[in-house]
Length: 395
Image (cartoon, rainbow, N blue to C red; front, side):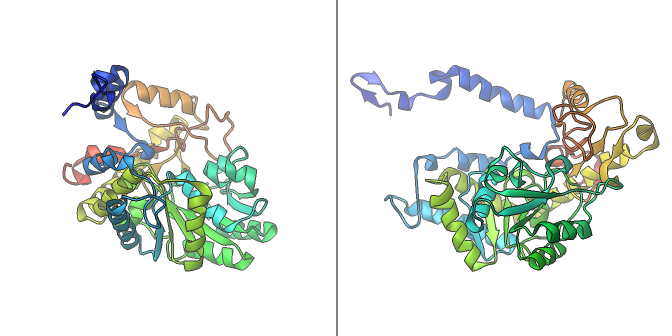
């Protein structure tokens, strides 16, 4: 039924293509690009149709559920309870917060819950693979807190936990961060917790990139060890948004207040509904098989990049391989830099992103690799295209 106001058809009833062709054409062109490109960037994973449907629902009209400041939230309460129950069961957490709008906001709220401005945090150096929310100077984390950093070994580009312990004893941080966007190895979360306890620090694990592997039982879970764990979409395959997990009741209560009213107003309830759908999918056997294919797929470019002819071209694999979904090809000895490699791969329909490597001699906007030097994320690729018969059945 068409709504009329003052004899004129209301814009509220008009389809997007009719009302705003410019926006509609851009949206309609994107599926073609995605289907004709090998997407090898984990932050551009393919969201399932059920997730897209939930996020595009009328729930976008609603505001704050639970302890309500607004009425009409009875259905929203059910959806949020589903999301909470599912994510807690998926990761074995006692407490969860599903309202953060992004992984960055989840990190900000987790820090705000337990830290005061000027408190010291300790994380992996940004130029060694750390995330901007873990202490970058122009980010909230670098502006609000005193930042100390640890790095990777120059010999093998791996985290040396004895060195992390030494730096922690020297700087006595209030918070230690683990989990990064450009590190291809599993982490010893128990050892990180020992270090945090020794210096009287909280431990925050940012598992945004490997949460899907954790959910599938293919990667150690940080939840039993961290005071709180943050995550977002990427290998989990859900909507863009954040989650905070904890087994500590006191921490969880502070996180609740840090999210609202500390960081946000009304939550994005259509996104919460999409998270609920994603958490249900992540508990299915098919999801675990997809994650196994991701790991096998990541091993293939790593193995190829370790070949003799590739090494002769000045290309090596950071850390000598991968335990997770990403591969980092080191181009420091190559005549091709990260920007050039990214552009050339784009020209042949392969989407990756350039990234600095530890001890990178090239400028940050050029880099010596692609998103971790060839940080080619295979999550999106193996979700849509089995690379070989060994990767399992077709989608």
